[in-house]
Amino acid sequence: MAFDDPEAIRELFSPFGSVSVRRMFGGHGVFADGMMFALEQDGELFLKADDLTIPKLAAENSEPFVYRARGREIALSYWKLPERLYDEADEFAAFAREAYGAARRAAGNKPKQTRKAGTKKAPKPEPQEIRGKKIKPR
View 1 (cartoon, rainbow, N blue to C red):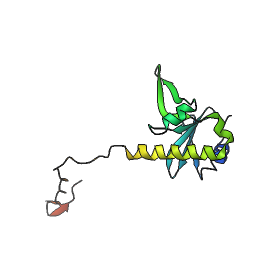
View 2: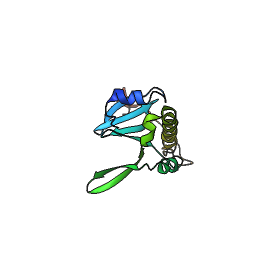
View 3: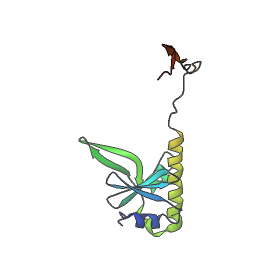
View 4: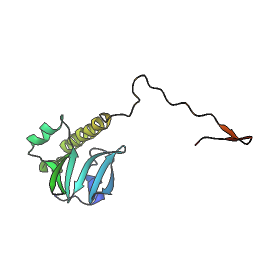
């Protein structure tokens, strides 16, 4: 089944809830609450996956999204939507919710930039005077 039209994608995801669809990478990204959790490429849909959801997708004979770049294949953490789910709205919504959860977990696992323990912010330099005028540091 080919879903390369943003309106068709939004309609398919309606049992899950409201989504936005944005053109990207020659396909479409599917977002909920500003978080991308699915993508469409060449009419095929792929759901965000992680260690918790991959076993279920693999049991459905799903495969990861793979693209070629610079002569090598690169697999992303998105797995093909099982074909049977296009016709089973409730199960599709459950898989979509799990994909959204995987996206949230992935966003929460990104390293945050923090200062090393024991370090402090550098103090702001004081304005300097040149010929009687205060000059703010840049």
